[in-house]
Image (cartoon, rainbow, N blue to C red):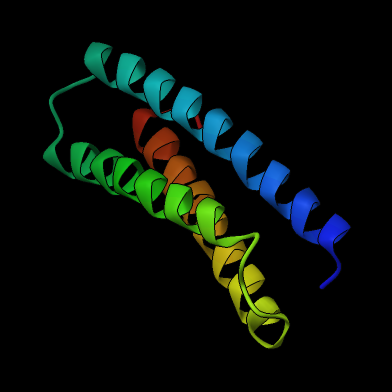
Length: 97
């Protein structure tokens, strides 16, 4: 992977982490107004737990060897997809999805 591609992925991960931090905060506000639901709290906690993992991947993005680049990028993409699924699940359970 060329350096431009690595930089682009690094910037994308960084921006999406900030976006997900905001999304999770907003979900927390919506849940505060909703019924006390341990399952929803667990899903939001799962989302929060993914952010430090993404931060670690952010640090690795510039140093992943070319032969592992495809697997690395796929892993990052799957993590973001999982966040999206969890968010949709929570929103659906809150009645707005």
